[in-house]
Length: 91
Image (cartoon, rainbow, N blue to C red; front, side, top):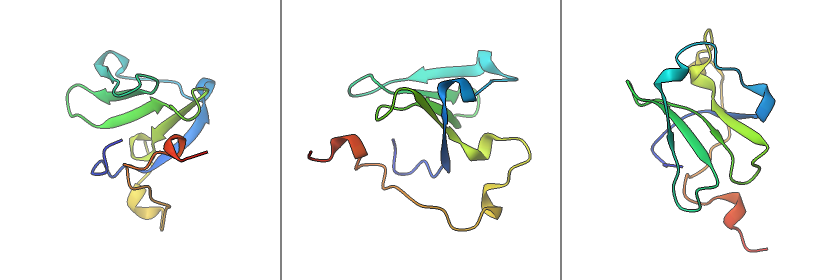
């Protein structure tokens, strides 16, 4: 994932996300191994969610896309550099 995206990402099982509006505006982007499936809005470009490479049974989702949630009011959150993927670490 791009290190400049700046999204707050949380995780849920695949059945844990339901798109209630705008699904027709979502576009899929895959890169490198084509395992992860990244979705974004074709109108504004915001990252909404992705099926994880490290755990394909989960979605990561952008907390800022949830109606009624202000990510700036959440306080400190853990960060990832966007380059070092957990699945890339030496075993």
